[in-house]
Each structure stands twice: as structure tokens, then as C-alpha cells.
Image (cartoon, one colour):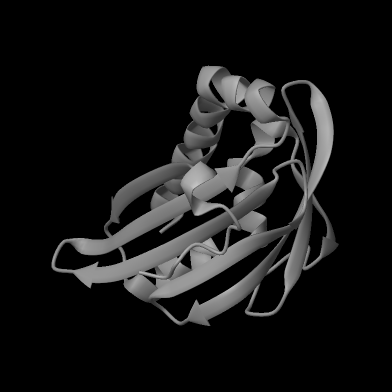
Length: 158
């Protein structure tokens, strides 16, 4: 496992998801880094890719800036793929956005039943105690639901 890139790993919120997909590992890996498929999975938040890689596949060293509406606020998040080992792993890290810090590890393992896709998503909220309370009451559930919906779209597309 790759260590967190976050400055205060003891202060982060952690979301871990595992999804079994009946498809080859290479297809699952590619769909997970597809900008176009990501946009399909986030239509509820009016998400758009507005800078960097805005369509096709994102690769190591590349960035994408997403714009979406969350909790009634239009905001942007820029992430960069900092590590990639095709077709088993890639990691993106927030460069700019509403979180204090954020990273997302994507793992893929070929099994007899298909591909096991594992997400490890970590973030740290700003705004001290108010941010922690908002995270506990709404943000973690919201982020978990977004990741689950994304994984379902990947599963169906695969």
C-alpha cells in the first residue's frame, strides 16, 4: 500500500470501497481513468472537466480541473495523477480545491471472478471544528455516495 500524501494523516477522513467487476483488469483500469466516463457518473452534480485533460484517458503527470455543484455551491477541484503502474494502480492528489488536502488511490487485481477494484480515498477538511462537524454530518456520506455511483457506472460500462 502506498502511504498517504496528506500532511496530517491522523486527521483525515478515510473512505474505502471494494467493487468486483466482471471484466478484464485492463478495461477496468482504463475506464477508471476515463474523463468521459467520470463525467457520465457525476451528472447529478453538473460536473465538467474545464482544464487540463478534459476528455479521453488521464495519465501520470497530467492534471484535470473539475467544476461541479456540491451542497449548492459551484466549485473547482484540480487533481494530478502522481503515480501509475498500468494496469494495477494509480493515485491522484488534489492540487487545488475545497479540501484542505485529498488523495485517491485506485487498486486493481485480476481474480477468477473478474477484477477487484479498490478505492482508498482520503481527505482533510478545512475550517477546524466546523469542518469536522460538517464532515461527520454530511460530507463523508456525500463523498461515499459519489464514489459508489462512479464505481457502478464503471461496472456497467465494463
